[in-house]
Length: 304
Image (cartoon, rainbow, N blue to C red):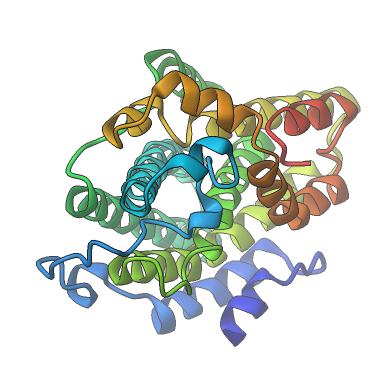
């Protein structure tokens, strides 16, 4: 865990090349391969959850209390499959943003080399999530068509600090769920391994994104900073709202309307998200991206 702690430590005095060189070296030492590390053909214990029950969007609600133990297990499997699938969606968006940013970069610099390392990592993560979803529930959960179109707009309009702030926020949101479940013996062993791999490798990506945001924010005009803060918060809001798709509740055998209503009022789930987003909010505040307008959006999805 020492490497994870070191990677997540904020050091504003480091330049992007120094950080990138360290991250490339870390990637060489610590990267893992889920395709060989996980036995994808091994049977699943029917008693194991897809995520820690406390991280279910319905945990603590009246609906949760009415479910049988097997229904709870099934629900968490579909919920976490949805989270992984939405993770694939926004990781594909982020890969395009990084590629475009580095298209005519300085190829000899560590910054460029780690950018390609990150893209390679994200490709492997998406395959890993796809395999895990296939094994656990055998279906795909996509964002709504409207959000899919918004994602395409973001792909083509995000630049500089907006790109990397969006990358950071998206990765932090997924990291919150995975850290909460990766050491829980009640969770399927192969899902715990998926979480461990992703948390380890995303810690590098988040460090890189933080340094890119810091560099992009230097000497930024106040109006541009406010726009960047608002744009990033809107993206975060839509990611959180779309993590568990309504179809996941239907596939778990639940009443979709009731499940969504109870999720909206679930104070336990809101508190879990809020308490685990503290460090992200502190960083956004530090770099000037937690404006009053942005705060309102983060509050809407209980990130603050």
